[in-house]
Length: 167
Image 1 (cartoon, one colour):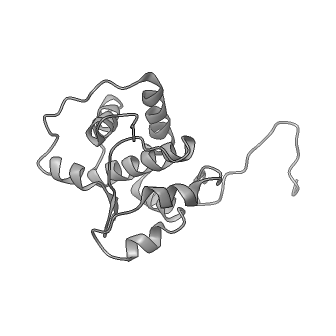
Image 2 (image 1 turned 90 degrees about the horizontal axis):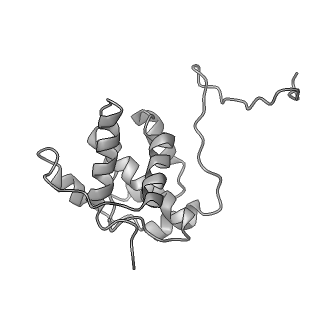
């Protein structure tokens, strides 16, 4: 099996560098969510292919990549990221634009919307989350949208000149 990037660290460092470039903080839990979503959405876009060689396991706080947990436990490791293809960079930028601004509450809602993931997380800590299973549950579903107003109501799409059913 070939991967778009050679290591999960390349993607983790990409997200950390992106956050730093935008003068924002990327807590470990959010980093793991972004890594998981990147792997899952890459599989959906590429018919089950994996973005990176990574294994996600259940943790009481959600899916984590144990190698990243270990390598980053004392701060950013002194690993130099390999260059990645423009297409992969664009894909990661899309993931960042779509999910990077979300707070942890929204990230958790997004993960809860992935069918079967809640059952896997409830099964206990340290169990592998099969990415093929996640791919099969997400395949064919429209991308998750979390657009909400300040009071929690869903955002309605507005098209100029078209009246809503209620209006």
